[in-house]
Length: 257
Image 1 (cartoon, rainbow, N blue to C red):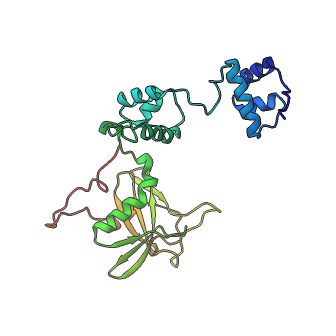
Image 2: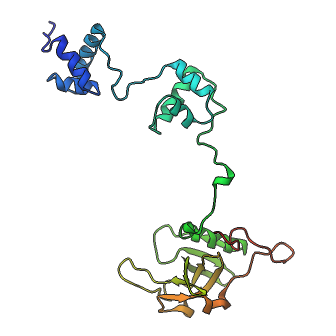
C-alpha cells in the first residue's frame, strides 16, 4: 500500500530552495532525515517537477566534457580543480578517480605546482627547525652514525664516535649581543632548567651566520645562556674535500640573509 504524501509540491519546491542537501529537505518537510526511502521519494518528486537542486553540497557541478577540457589546459591537478570552480583541495582525489574512469590522459599533470627556483629563499627565520638536521649533517660528513630518539627526551641526537655514543642537544640562535651571538641553553617549559651532565655530553650550537660549535656540557654546566664569542675554541672546522682542503659547506658555512 502506497503511503500518502504529507507535503505538497509547493512545499517541496520551497524546501529545496532553502536547503543545501537532501537531508535538509527532509528535515524541512518534517520527514526522517536518515531515511533512504524518503530521500528517493522526495528526489523523484523533485525530478518530476523539474526543481533545481544544483546548489546542493556534494553534488557534482561539472560535466565529463568540462573535466576533459580542464585537464587538457592544465599543468597540475590544482589547476584542474580551479578551472572547475572547486576550492576544496581534497576534491583532487575525486577528480583523479573520475579521470581514470573516463580514460582521460593526465600524464602531463603534476601533483603540486612547480616552484620556481627564485621563489625558494633560505632564511635563518627557520633556523630552529633546521638545527637538528644541520647538526646531523655535520656529524655524518665527519663519518659518524647519527640517530634520533624515538621519544622526546633531553637530547636531540645520538652520535656514534670512536669514543662511544654521545648524547647531543642542538641549540640555535639568531640573537645578537654586541659583536657576539647569544644562545640560551636552558629549557623553560616548566621554568628555566639547565642541562645536567648526566643527561647530555655535548651542545651543538648553530648561530645566525651558520657557524657551528660543539661545546661539552662540562664547559657550560649550570649556565642558562652564553655569548659565543667566549667559546671560539669550540668552533667547528669547515667541510673539507677529499684532498683535505677546506671548502665552504653550502649547509653549514654559507651566510643566509
